[in-house]
Length: 171
Image (cartoon, rainbow, N blue to C red):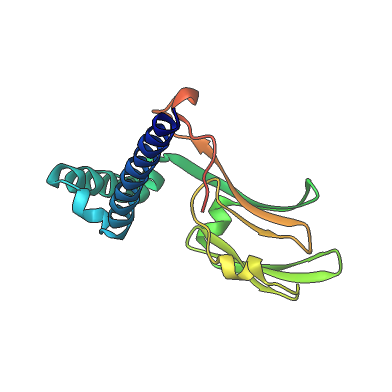
């Protein structure tokens, strides 16, 4: 009987060593997989698909702003939702500038050729000045310290319906 127990223990020990060998080979395979270059697994179709997706993204990036057929009608400067200044589009075609004061900060709003911008500001961050010229309907330039928003408003082209209109333009 003692001989039988020892043979069972030997078989159990051999079984454990066999499973340990399998675990080691699995670890080696996983280790070699992690050291391989990931792009070796890609096929030519993968590269084609990634190229098509990237090309479509770039195409839409440049075409999307041209799909907006809104005609600018005026530029408005608002502070906390209250209208401070409205410049009609007919005046925006000519060159001009005006000063605006809001929350203790002074701004110079300039316009020419249908474009408008914050030309100068004495606010601390000057994000509004760095925004530059805005020329399409719906574009905005904002100053957080002064709570000012400069926006070009527009109307829909007569060929478009409200369903064709864009909801948001992000610059």
